[in-house]
Length: 538
Ligand SMILES: Nc1ncnc2c1ncn2[C@@H]1O[C@H](COP(=O)(O)OP(=O)(O)OP(=O)(O)O)[C@@H](O)[C@H]1O
Ligand SMILES: [Mg+2]
Image 1 (tube, rainbow, N blue to C red):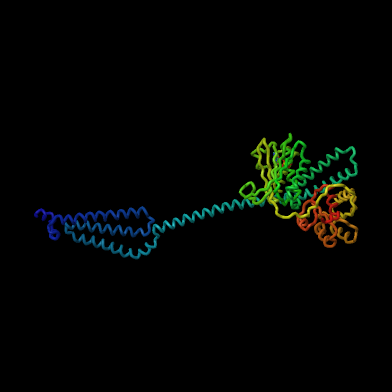
Image 2 (cartoon, rainbow, N blue to C red; image 1 turned 180 degrees about the horizontal axis):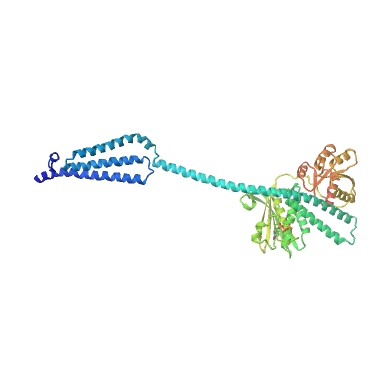
């Protein structure tokens, strides 16, 4: 008991000794928890201070400092509790309590108004949601940026295409103009040669005349190719029954290829009609066959297969072509095209042939023909083994019209009748007149539509009017044909032109059109057929 009294007897500590009934276990029961609480209270402000120091951006950081001070005060009161068990420093204890009270009250006062603001802060799950929404938005924005970039590339490409097509348009106009004049020159040469032949004035000069005719024919083919390249040729879509027409075309190919080239044709019996410009189609086949011939200098076989097929738009080589098509494939067993060049063979002016042997416009014509016909063309080649060019032309469901002139081959029986020839080019008019006179027609000339109209109106005997479409003056050839049809419905009119946008309309209106350049005998046959009274029905 004495020992105990000594322990409590820190001088004046009787009240505590008394209160704790002089039992040491009660004393330690006070000291132990107070010390633990004090230590914990001291550690909490440290943690808070460390947190706020590290997270300087934390919202309401100052309230953490207030918590830290308040908890520090609370911890101190517990240590002072222990101290006063032995030392009666109640004044100091009171002061510590006052300081702790002050900071506690201040913290409690500022905490309540802070509560709504603290509650307004986004919670972790809200932040997660916002984060997810933001990620989604970023993704969306990235997608938009990507689409925008894609659009910019497309825009750039469209611009390029537009520039290219403007360039081609300009080039086309220029080419069209040149070819127009060039065709007239050819027409004059062709006409004069034709007259020499018909008048039998070629004795002794047969070889020279033949060479000139070949040169003119080549010029003619060249003119057609340039027109086709410039897209200035007149397109008169015909319904072509492939079963019937392919054998005729193959005969033509046989005549234009060398004798050591064999052509085999296989047309599926079910294949139907295509609606294409006849001359363009013929030219495309000639161009493909001529390439095959050039690829087989020692001769070989050209195989033409015509079948019907349904394409579904999944073959990128066919550029989205869908539906029922006629598939015309022309294969040779020639040299083939080197793999690195196969993509270039449809380019205008691409040729591997020596100068003077190729212009590089053959397959370009084939390609533009196929496109204009609403179809496509592909090329497959194995170097050393051969090449296959395949044309895909949409099949037509339309019924055949009989607008195209039908050329009946046959005799040069002396023609009867008076032709009114309307042409502003005096040389061309003269040569046409000479040719037609050779065939036995009477020919009168008019230099423009107005003159022609007044001649017919004045009652000058006229059996047929043959007029160029492009002419100076108020009326062009098509206008003249319309007026004549109204006033003189029985009078046949034939329109000729090298290239003209009007030609398409005129053909739709049922006028007969002869595209230039044409051979003299073709001009004669068309006129003869127009003058021939229609065969009795049945
Ligand atoms: N059947 C083929 N076999 C081998 N090469 C071919 C064949 N068809 C085309 N080519 C190649 O493609 C190129 C281009 O052909 P394209 O018909 O456009 O022009 P070209 O024949 O050179 O000249 P052009 O036809 O104007 O006289 C040819 O020069 C040739 O190299
Ligand atoms: Mg060619």
